[in-house]
Image 1 (tube, rainbow, N blue to C red):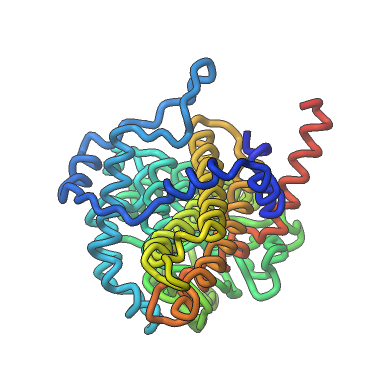
Image 2: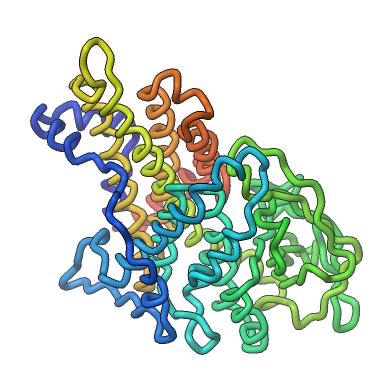
Length: 449
């Protein structure tokens, strides 16, 4: 299904062009506008109670349901995240973007509302929710500010997943309760000489008795300014190449570990992205995550799934931009009529909203497949690639529809435009996603699929 939905902007425009005008007009009339329905103030406490959200059931292959159909619990969680975003985040977005500093009250709120590490089982104090539910939160937060969403996404879809899958019981007991209550984390992979070629890393760990001594540096580390725990990939045996890559859990206060320069970025400015440095950092072998030399496998696996989170961020961002733009278009008058009343404008908006819906369906489908235990390498790459492209086109078009005011900071449209660009870069560039998709297609053909 995902493969059939994976089309370029040109292909989709061509398909829409073949539709009859009444259908396009119908789509335009149903374009989403900002929700004005009040939300129950305590939904989140009912949703993430001590009993936790019901586990997402495995997909019933004999009787499949729509990927975008939400259960009552999922809808409550989605509404709760939307309310938090509007009430707590929205008033601070402009200030945080201008200063490039995250308001720590928002970070505290993410923990207080139970949004962090929601897949952690009840055994460790978590709600035992689903990967899909985590992506719903990312999408809703991104409608208001993707800078906040990215931090939560890294913790929920990357670091929590890694610890649940490969951590020892002692590591889980020590860290997972903190991930839920007050501890932000960072995922540390990239280096100055290893971006897309991530396994060309030079940061290394030398064995010294029952410890490892780590030296080197990492760049582009999100959450680094306030993270308390870092999941770091380094090479424990450079002679073995990528087969020496090993994952470590490193606490912020470890001697020799330091936070370096903060990047001055185009977008996601409130999300701190920093360099981190290791100067003879000694860590006990008990801090190795999983097996020595298996880090490259863990990294590939978790990023394959984590890309769904970035796709969720992009569809949320695109929808948020539309939700600010369409009401303006419906009110703005030129040449004696509302901009909305020009059929050409309706068709452009209908086209973009259709692309967002296609991207959302791909993302939801990939997330549900992952929860059901299916391999989602192709689906995740397709979702991330397409959602990133859609967000780029959506924000660009929204600025055009807004006219001159869209190019100013008086409206949030230009921020969405700046924020979306990273979606085609981090956790695998668009070209890397296309490489992955092509490999999957080749493998399928070789297997006669």
